[in-house]
Length: 504
Image (cartoon, rainbow, N blue to C red; front, side, top):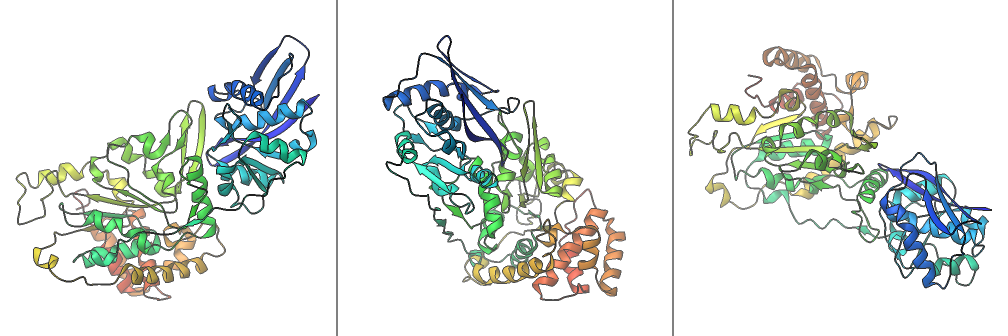
């Protein structure tokens, strides 16, 4: 008779159901696993055999066949150890078949029967809830999976605990969710001396999730301001926290089952490969743009990134997701991030600094910023120059609003957008609006429309650039608590369309 257990195989952040079919039949003694297992899954037979031996359970001298259905779905990872062991124990009538068939299990077995934590417990719990099954996982992964309230999660320390649980000798208590990781950042926007215009652009970017490009000489505060952006962003909503945590769960970045309400801040180095930024590898793991989902992706020294890597950002910026295509996998990951890029005006960095004249001006700047293509530059809503800060400004006391004060204004603007897009699940901020929806919410008054039309003709704005100005103007109006987009809002939005050599 065939005993059945259930587990999952991961395709991006999606957990695909997998049925583990175990049969113990007469024949030449063997232990085979079929159903497109990878090397880690194939090695499970040795870990399972040894773990059962540690419980004084000897496998019979028969033919043991484990089939992972559907057979055409690749099975990757060590989390198949536990469901294979449970299915085998049910086939040997040590555990009740009906009870095992009503569970979803994942976990890696050590040789002494202990359960080791695995990645993907949160998506697995979502899949178990959809199938109305109980999830059994290592105790270290239980706090993470327990965030799915619709699923009962049982966390066990070893295989013996599970045997005792199903036999009724020692019933395990359901796992409880981990702690919400507090925001421990001490970086305050008020620490930035001068740069009031750049701080205003940072506030607008945070309020409407507008992509921001800062160009300025070394030491002007670009990285310093970008590092303070998470401090003015509103906390993740419950839905956003779950989305972000599922990606981090697949990547193995959740610690102690805790879920953070702080928006992620990722800052890859300019030597990062395309696979590291976009996602990839043998199993198509999420890249930096997906790990920054619902948060900030800060790319310092933007022109120093390889041209091919930069160009791959164009599609995720527009669609909010990325398709990682490999020979053996086609995985879709979410990638709705706020891109903040920083760049020097030229290779030496002092093209715009009158105190330190660039020896190769203006060709140095044209060649350096020319590494950023026009279509990619056009996708930045806010583009501005960040001038150097004088020594006199550095001696002045801290001035301007604190991060808490700016965050309050940003939260108020986000609340307006949440109410505005209440009937549209795919829209969350003004940066997401397009088509008829954008026309309805961001059509300026007559003076604003006239100004925008003249600017579009004068500076040859593309259709994309035209619409991005409208989105930024709508956000500025939200910060001003104005129901209408007026001429001053359009004028300020236009002022952030930094002219480059390609557009002048």
